[in-house]
Structures are given as structure tokens and as C-alpha cells.
Image 1 (tube, rainbow, N blue to C red):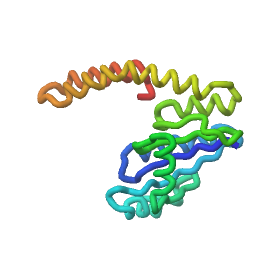
Image 2: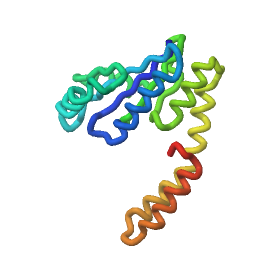
Image 3: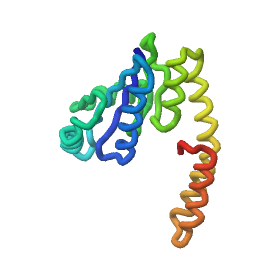
Length: 169
């Protein structure tokens, strides 16, 4: 079995998309299991608990609540994953094959692991690092435009260039 572990916070807008992604990935191949771990909400644990209570029937994956923030802190210390959502891909041997933002290569890394491709997750990670290195100047340019009144069109053009480079952006 290959495991996808997603750490999320209900207060994070990207959480909704990441939960749907991980739910879809769980059904993408045989012997792929997913679990979502609700990280301690810095604004109050009730946000995550309320979210889980409202959505437990709709979620197609196992969900746990890290009430004491111990799991997240342990993974943070090991993998330096500071933002939510964040994901880990654990291969059949129990090794963490990939970690990072689920929208930044998780799907490709999972496909490589499921296919038994040697070095697949590492290749995906290297490709994503190269892409993000290319994005860094674009992100700075976007920031400059986004902070200036009347520069919305320029900011939107930069975002379009990012999407043209990477449709998953």
C-alpha cells in the first residue's frame, strides 16, 4: 500500500482543493490510501473541529484531528513543512518518497511510485524545484504590481505567464 498523508487547516482556503485532490488520488490506483490530518488551528482548535463535524459525511478519506499539534510538529521538525496544506507520500517500503505542497508535484510523484519508477519522486521534485526557481522572479514581479494601485492588469498578466509555464499553478 502507498499512503498519502495530508496535513491541513480548515482556516486555509487551499484546504478545500487539497482535500478533493487527495480524495481523488486515493481512488486513482489500487492500494493507495489517504488520510487527512487536521493540524492545530492557530486561531482556535474549534475551527477544525467544526469543519470536520460539518464535512465528515462528505469526505471520502479518513480524517484525524491533531488536537495537541504533536504529529504536525514532528513532521515539521523532520521535513520542514511549515505551510498548510502539505502532504507526504509514503511508498510501499514505508519510506517518505515525496513531501511538499500537494499542488506542487504530488500527483506525478504518486504516479511514479505506483508505477514502480525508480527515482520517480526525486525526478518530480527536481523538476518542480526547477520550475519554482523560474517562478521566483515572476512572483517578485507580481508582488511589485499587486502592491501598486492601478497595476492590476500587469499583475494579472504575470499570473497568466505563470499559468502558461505550469497549468497546475
